[in-house]
Image 1 (tube, rainbow, N blue to C red):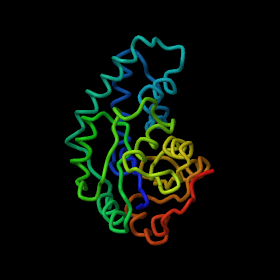
Image 2 (image 1 turned 90 degrees about the vertical axis):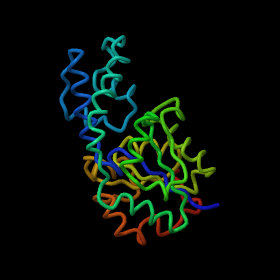
Image 3 (image 1 turned 45 degrees about the horizontal axis):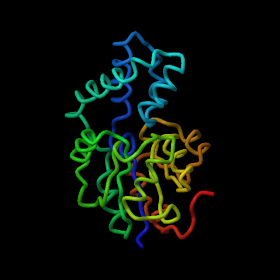
Image 4 (image 1 turned 135 degrees about the horizontal axis):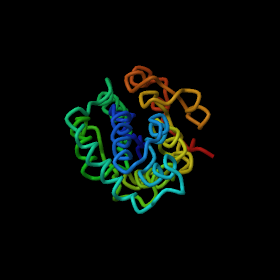
Length: 227
């Protein structure tokens, strides 16, 4: 079976993390919350439920959660026309696929957001499958998303590599026993990503593309999963 490459999208392939940060900040403000933007940004990559816990704490009024999440979705939708892939993102997917890897987009975004992001990425010719929020019960850093992406590809963890941009990606991949390559394009620092267990760290998708032959994608996994 072909090895499987799982790619996060937000902050990894598309330059969206700071747009999500702003949308969440405005959504929180509508309901009387003003957490620091840095705390919001450091939580991007988590699912909305876990982001609310981390940013606002357990003692908040949980009756507002659904409304704040809906507000975030509406506010983020304003940015759809501005979504853009990082330089080299689409070419990276195509290059990985050309090496015989099955490419799966691993996102817990809504089905609607996923469709918008795929149009912006414009690399469906290299993509075999994709996940959305409908495929998981628990969001990152839980491993459900990674496992759902593996199931879409019909692959096992030992046959896969995940690419993400946050510690939540790395933790989710690690919990699913899948090694994770990290990129700095989402705004996390290399020290944090390596401390979380990143197998390799690159500046952005273009840098990973340039070093592809020497990366994990140059040496298909053979039982090398995280232990």
